[in-house]
Length: 214
Length: 270
Image (cartoon, rainbow over all chains, first blue to last red; front, side, top):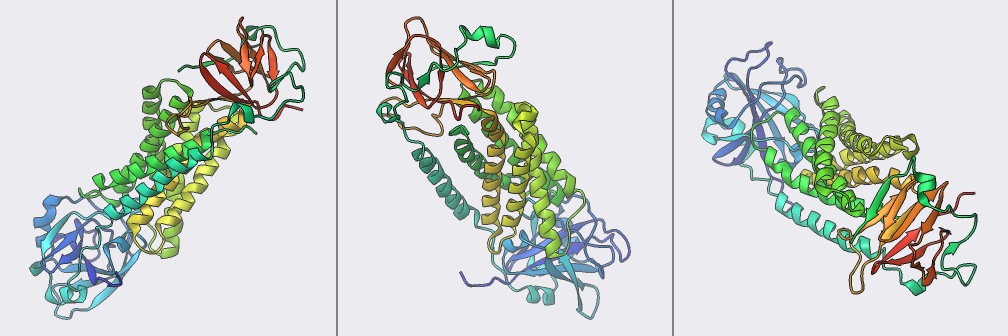
């Protein structure tokens, strides 16, 4: 469990994008196994030297082929994370690599996950499509997103405990356990101020009527 | 203050609905939606599930129409949560960790608050119910849920607990106003050999002016006091046969039509 996975995320910007312009397509790629990566939508600035901003068009599973093309595009965005679940927690640091350049320098950027949902992964691409030095930087990676069954069991146990424990606190009040009234002849009632002769006399205008039926 | 089982039961139902909603989150997670759409769909599922469960359960506890109330809760809870989540999500995510946590907490708060607002509006927007206090409770619960989701470790786990927590807060915020203005609670006791449970709870909260018919017995809250009107043959109240209209001044058990009811008149008005 202590093993820290060397997962990485790659962001590929479509071929139509260029520095200084709004990119047309963005996918986040994560190395899952030595043979593939997962991609999703991500925000990135037109200028990779700045922090990520803006929103981009929806991508779908059909974009996998496009993603393969995108990997041949000049820019690739990479995020190194310890596990998939970390992507959903907080903004993560990433690096931009210039695929077409001889120098494999990276520029630091930030990935922000959704506010309520978990990050979305849309498809896979072959690792051979990823530039070798980036792949090495990201490591081989391991799937880190298989927590849901275990979490579901934990949540079910918590809720089962709630369903069982909460009604225990209510208990069934036995008739004889009720405290006696001030007057020994009156069980929990009092003549007090004279009660109205009929409920309709008082509530004809305002009463809400409801009923308990077995 | 009335001793009511409804808030605790609502917490259980709301938490369960939150967990079910979390299980449904996976249905929208793999088909290529943007972060904004993911947030909106997640909020919609959460609000709809909690709304339907809360209003449906409340209808069952009151013995009113469950499908109709659940449908209303489904629509209002989903719409309220969707509206709340959309307010902040359309501005995009902050990039600093601190700013992101604040933004996430606000987004969860608006989601919970929006659902609570819509559901409380349906329940009757009477100032005496203090609905804004209830919505405030949901907002605070949402802030806590946003913080929970940002806890270190497995985000999936914290998302589940955040959803459960929001479900609890929204559900409780929907029933607390009724408890706050209630002057009496009438609860059907389980039959011999049965155990009290959330699913079998039958409880009606009576505010001023409310009239309740329990078998042959009629109860009315008049100026904060609970009056009982026995039928012609009388009714057994805490073991004593009563034939005339009286005030219920302390917790009593009424046997009517083969069923026992616990009546809690709360504190009498001064």
